[in-house]
Image 1 (spheres, helix red, strand yellow):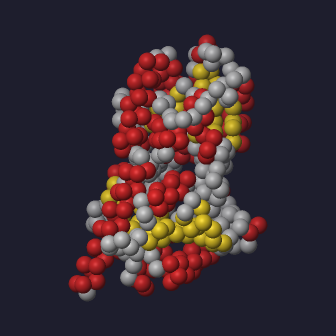
Image 2 (cartoon, one colour; image 1 turned 180 degrees about the vertical axis):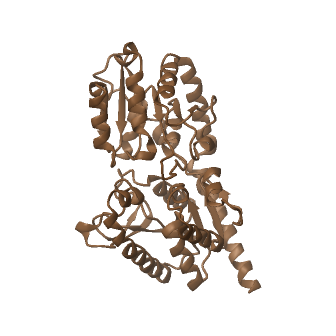
Image 3 (spheres, one colour; image 1 turned 120 degrees about the vertical axis):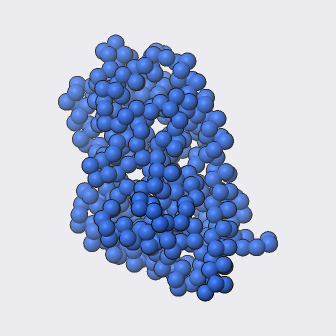
Length: 415
């Protein structure tokens, strides 16, 4: 890791885009590709959805491991591992095979690739696998908490494993302060590096909404949601809020919902029950490269995230950064790490979660004030450029890798 020798990074993750257009954990592909552009050599260990094996994508070598027969492999992707487990408890039987296969493939990569640092995304199980590898090979470990790993699986046993992983990492990072606070309840952990995920500003600022709006009237207003259709996203609150808008406003507005997930069927049912199905459009999963056009079509982005009964919260919310880069005004809620991303009244508007009535009033206010929306959107765009470009984020992680290596060297000398 010194001189002109390229830095070798082995990334472990439970989700990684399966194609160029896939949106599953797409921020990790952006990170890996930008680390490569900064001179690092990057290998990624990720679960296979269909085909397993290794291939090079945008200069990054991705090893996709099989953990169960292909037709039964349902643990990862879709709504995400935790929602998948909640919906189908029988998937828990795949978890040991998942962890064992990731560990085996990581060991093979360490022997063949010889990384300078292992970067685990999500504390469990990737952080645990990384720490076990560290014990065997004395390789520096960086663990990144993305939010879902902090807010879910809160039993005492799991909490002990999480803290074990973070204590034995050389550096741990968190996407927001809120995520780090949840993980460090009770104190005792090393101080985290707060490094958010970023956004491809150039991609999202160049969206063209003309085709999507070609059949709409010039005065038609579009309210946009993008994300997985899972409970924590609070999309049912948004649908109820849309139904509460004044008839005059609702009759010249549409609610566009982009994404898929376990809540999709019940959300369709809700729109029919509320009598607004003709004004709500479900687009399903949209290729990542096409998303900028949806942001460019919209007048307001709404992310109505909630805190679930199980305590799940929004970790960071990369979709808000996409809206920032697209110069689209954002309305969201005071939950999880969102307040680290959005400054109320400057880069967006924050309301209390779980209140469709308040959400409806705020939507009406924003749609009625184009100048205010534009000011907020312009501020947010500048924030995306200065604080969330992938060049900035990848440089922060490179600094974390270098620091982890120094810590590992110091620990080795003091043994």
